[in-house]
Image (spheres, rainbow, N blue to C red):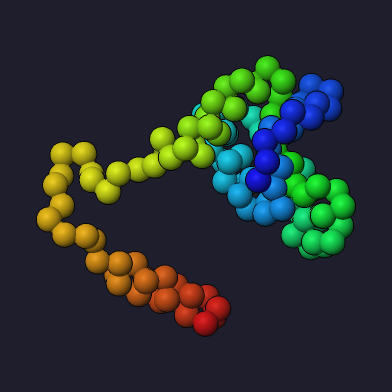
Length: 116
């Protein structure tokens, strides 16, 4: 992923990537902070990777007035400042949580839906 400064009208491209799902995570993060954002060329990048190379991949765009705030949020995201701790507020865990229950539940749901 690269951070760019392309401008198209009232919107600016603040990130590019050959993996649109990375940009979708960033879009969701920005929208959770009430910054409208959208991903351009995400579908074509997933479907036609050779065309994606020629077009430069998918782009994450935000409105020009939100560019500075969006860049700060993405910088904090990329440096790991927004990671969640394993601790729950007010609760001290003695051991790591058992992940088998979550996997069993996911397997059960997939079998119910006929995916597995």
